[in-house]
Length: 346
Image (cartoon, rainbow, N blue to C red; front, side, top):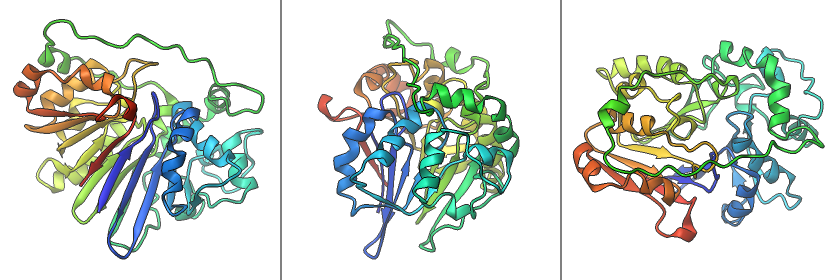
């Protein structure tokens, strides 16, 4: 059994990976979305035998971390955490002595409550070249991103980014400014959009996102957060070359909610992928970008699923002419009241 649930993270990420067999079930929660995400997923978490084996906080941006803070702040403690994977400020320096940034809530909470933190990495940073001690259950988890250089590049802006994310006590998250939904009028020129020059994401925070390659019983899933496209490509290229040029994977969680700055034709050319998962309601930044989706349609394989966890985002691409021309299927929540929830089974 392998099941990946995309949860209602609003414009962010919150994904629950479950896998196992008759003898065991493992659960990996990747990010927590916005603060309101936690209230929507709390009933689901209560059904999970109180256990999350690994909680991954890919990076410090508020659309990934605020729901995690809400979970850890819940006095009812609905779940037990086997390990928390998160690169704190001291991990950016790659040093062993921890003196948390004053008031940085997640670091402080992990230390104060003595929660297991990067236990699988012996307390070290999560980065390329640091393999985790993983479960002896036939599965593997490999770190694709970030690398040491990307972590160190965040040091000068860490405190500013923490404040922007509302992680300093007494400082509220910056007010989010919604942007209108994107509506398509007339034909979409997919080849022209896909051919647009790739401009790399300039966010130092996004570039520290933890990217992972999970595999179990022949199924492979790439989980990206908002990870850097170049770093992902560099990690996946040797694996692709070993398989004749393209690495077969069963799903790609599209980085940064389908931003054109985090998905290149180069990366797509390294993958033989059947499902592209896009987590966002698009309300803040208008993701996914048309260019990113066009790249998937043009270079993402002859047949594929585009999986959206919000119906409004799916509607922009559920166009019969494009589906027929580019060989894809749109997957979305079954009903409006299920927006945010989509389950993919492998």
